Length: 427
Image 1 (cartoon, rainbow, N blue to C red):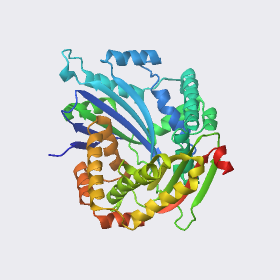
Image 2 (tube, rainbow, N blue to C red):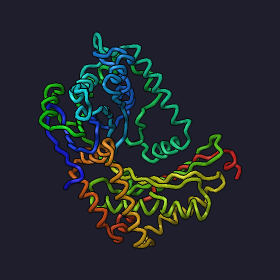
Image 3 (tube, rainbow, N blue to C red):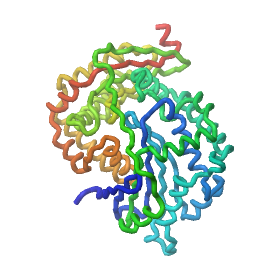
Image 4 (cartoon, helix red, strand yellow):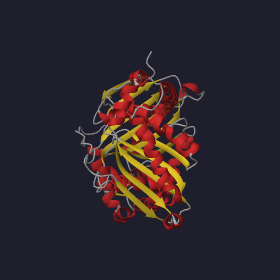
């Protein structure tokens, strides 16, 4: 029996994904909008969902909209932004009780979908422009959100590594855009962008819960209809293979240095080496038994934290660590040694099996929530693949040491970024 039963159908201008499961007493709706990352659009796209979730034509104030959600047995509704490779993804998520489990037979499935349709297709617009005060309020909030990244030095250093590493590539853009571009947006220009986005974005609608597919389809046909489109696709840039690694040091008034190292893996989701790469990352820096954690943090006591992550659709491996400002040279040396050890196959079968077990548990834990399930399945949309959860688990299980070393051999150091304070400058 499949762990996730996903039915995908082409509808008017979007794909409908229905995942019928008796696991939850709620139904979850996730509406995704995908477009290429561009400097021109990214800030508009960051602001757009915030304005759309604040009010609609049917619920003309935020108070009215939120009060209606309370009436729907406390349904939760939120928006989210993400980068996946060189695409910008907007997500609208509504979680609502399933009326099958209530004494009151209010048709919550219909009401929830009507609410989401109101947000997506019937925004708070008058005379071809968004509600001016709502746009200005959300612009202030977006500026604060952009500033918060600068204030959080761990997030800031991650963002700066990506900026330096992917300079000139769309992936260097932050999902929230820039303060300067926020200032330029007007209620008119945002509405014009909304119209373009709803006409051109790749649209996917996920419904997860104990639902009947024919009923869901009938409701979708009634409530959601868009013009046909051929969504834009982008060729992912893998960077210059012959360029020398960059070393960037930035000074700020910080007590703890942030050392971030970026590598090009030259492997993306769906490629033959992808699952060996995930096992590689688990042994290298992904988990608490990894080489970075044990050798940099525990044995050498050089880092407050040391870990690595893979960006699946851009093919990046990024190391993040917090170190004393004076420990830069030693920390870089030990991190390089761990990468060299991985490339030489200096790891045991026990480490491989331990890592596979953690990856399996992590994946099963992720798909145990409706939202996590959507995020896993959406990898297929972004990469134009059709990899099932079972194939994913099996591919990890069958990964061999030789395959991990072959994946490691493709990894190239790209950029070392160090955010340091005055103490480090004096050394």
